[in-house]
Length: 489
Image 1 (cartoon, helix red, strand yellow):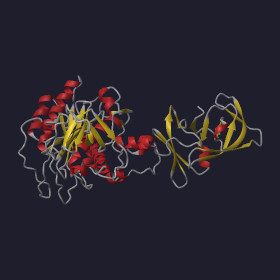
Image 2 (cartoon, rainbow, N blue to C red):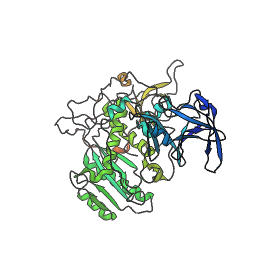
Image 3 (cartoon, rainbow, N blue to C red):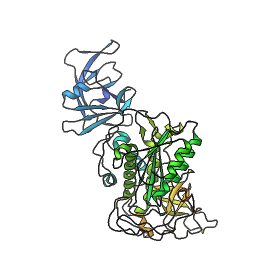
Image 4 (tube, rainbow, N blue to C red):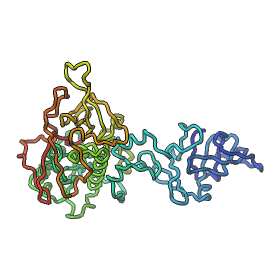
């Protein structure tokens, strides 16, 4: 334990039994002994200073013979003008100016600063961002640094500042109201989008399982498509579990309050719960998830200035990530684990919108011909372990495992310029002036491409609607475009 410092609220002063930590050490002027928890004693050999981080130096640290731990005294920190804040899963130390100077991570029933990887002057493991921290911050949909590593508050990611303009605080529920996954489903529609997705969709249906908070997203050309997706999801969940679904909950929108939903719920014995009009807080579960998904999607699009017509791919990827990283309050488990009974892997995650290279499939290539195609990473396949990639030259989405990634940061030149499809950052669902030209998204792929995606799950369920794009609220027509994105997770 010599490389670990532990925060101790019952310790009267800072102390350590390891000489190597001291930047300065003076012999003890008087005989002093420290009493240990087992009533044993250790002699204070000296007193000195220890630098844990560039912002946190411990003064009057006792060098105690036979002490096996390095202890930081809460009371001594308070006497020196620091503020120590304990909360679930974190311990934070602030200076007199309320600046975070150190974060500690849980270690059993205590909090510790792990310094095993530090050489030279000691510093807090999470005091500064590393290349890996930035990489995982981006791979996890720009998850906040505080949640990722309990890092310093002043770490700044520019796409986050553009994508998350307002930090919302939500009052947590006091208990979980359901007993098992699939007992109650919350649902809501978001849209219309400011520009059609690559498969011509304008709306997204968000469904949340109350118990696990597991998410599904489905993309629709019209709101009335919600029933088909809800019906298929409910029937699938009933087949997956022997436990009965009790109810679904939605607003009073016409896409939910209609005879099709009424007959379906009656036939299956489901209760269809509605919340009052114009009172989103009554359906706060799905409203909060809507905000999370849109913020993550907007931020991922902004990082590489990905055209807004890829908003559905970004929302789909945000849903995929959220199911694998967010803990369910009061249950202490990730949504994916609560639904499937096992922890998910995140080793395969990559930064949305990064450059990637797809292996060509042609049988005969010239010896000096390039072996790969330039692409943009757009997320993960729904029914396989493949990645979804937008091929710049062909302007279409493929799913493939034979891909390598370039996640270097920052990306100063928008890669979509290679296909004449560059776009400045705009909002996804806000009604703004101007319509983005989707470009030629239906071009034929060269023979070297992996097999193209003829359809996707959001195109199933009947003949396609006439290719007449719906009107937006401001009365302007908007265009459809190209290959389809995934429908749900």
